[in-house]
Length: 42
Image (cartoon, rainbow, N blue to C red; front, side, top):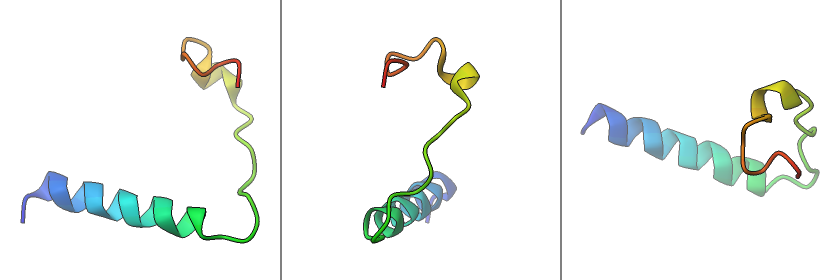
């Protein structure tokens, strides 16, 4: 299998695991990283 495909599949598994949790994960608080992001306001 392609290395990139394996990485993507692992990330998808991690996302699904988080999505299935009862509680929401802690909010991202480092807004410095997102200051130029289109989602900065969120």
